[in-house]
Length: 70
Image 1 (cartoon, helix red, strand yellow):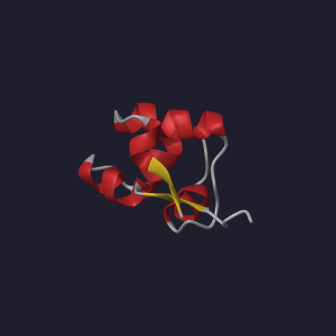
Image 2 (cartoon, rainbow, N blue to C red; image 1 turned 45 degrees about the horizontal axis):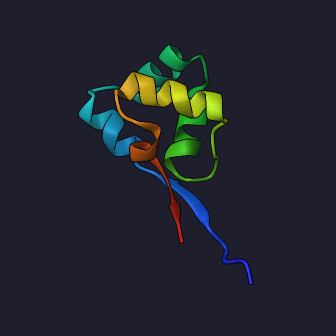
C-alpha cells in the first residue's frame, strides 16, 4: 500500500524573516503574487526550477524550504 504524502513548505515564514513582501518576492522570481500566495498556502507545488530559485533567493537549501508531510 502506498501512503499518501503531501508537499509542505515554510516559504511564508522564511520570506518574512528575509523582510520580503509577497510582491517583492514575486517580482524577483518572475512570477505573480498569486503564485506566491498559492505556494505559501500549500495549494500549488512549484516546479523544480522555481523551487530552486526560491531556495537561492532565501539562501536556504531546497530541503529546508520544501518537505514531504507523511
